[in-house]
Image (cartoon, rainbow, N blue to C red):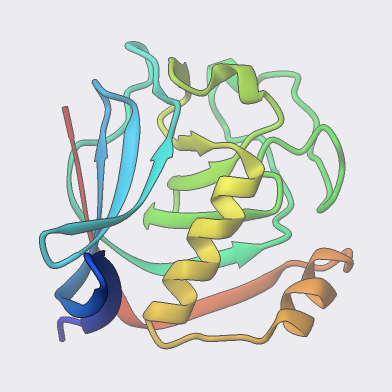
Length: 182
């Protein structure tokens, strides 16, 4: 089922405010060339973020995906891959944890959108296939997606999760179509 949203905006048009309705399905699109991620309602961009993407040796998967799953306060376990040899696991909240506050799966189990402990990598091809964002942008995106895909939580829930040493698994009632391309 496609999630259909309508937003009402008031735009200043002279002396009177005229309501403008933005409506359509919620979707996410990322460009590996431009290194941006946008959230759209219908054809209107409602959020835009700078990102880092996969390197040539470890490219970000291209195609159409559906976001259905998020993990707040995730642990990081090094994958069984050559590049991760000798890397140590990092607990939730550990400053060395490359996932930071949240990971948003677009191709489970291996690829997600997440914050980074290397914000200087934003704007570059620097990851092992995932999409990296600043930690604050990843939190903003995850909260927006939850709120608009049927998994709304109040501010106290987010505060409790982020101060906890335990991950919080969230399944979205409405999947969010996601396209990744050049």
